[in-house]
Length: 233
Image (cartoon, rainbow, N blue to C red; front, top):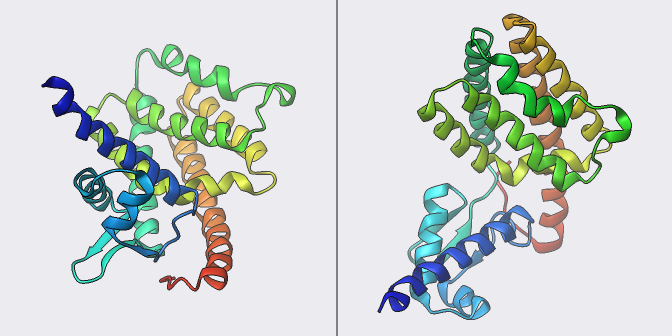
């Protein structure tokens, strides 16, 4: 009885994760249309867990439903992503200001220092690994500020940005720049230089936003020419 109840939930979770990965990897392109039946056949599953996974993806902002023509991967709307980046800047700026006033700051930042304040020979070079560490860096800064609700909101914003944010590390020099910029942010934090760290953080995120936008436009234009995808830019 218990296994019968749990199985559809696990199948829906599997489908959700696979479809999200397909979207992040541009295997499902922005603007692509598909039906529940097509996904069910590809995932070797019934339509019930497929529908559950798709409605979850819709709530997350990755797909949208057209009741007469099935589902569609959400077309790229750069104003939407720029708004999310603005939210990141606001939350992370407030977080580092609070951190500059924290009593146990050095202890809280020790783990991040061990990752980012290292010599060139100790730096990682795998773009996927560094992208994951970069996401963790920003999420941990907000978490250390001590406001759990802000941390949850920030995590949600970063999750929605992940589809384009990881493209940042496909560009030559961005891994090295990220190590340098993160190290500078940590140094300003430890010196409790609030305005300096806020300015560095804003510049860091703005550079990432601009870099990702350029790469994404290029990647999507290639996809558009190959697959005739209708993308809003």
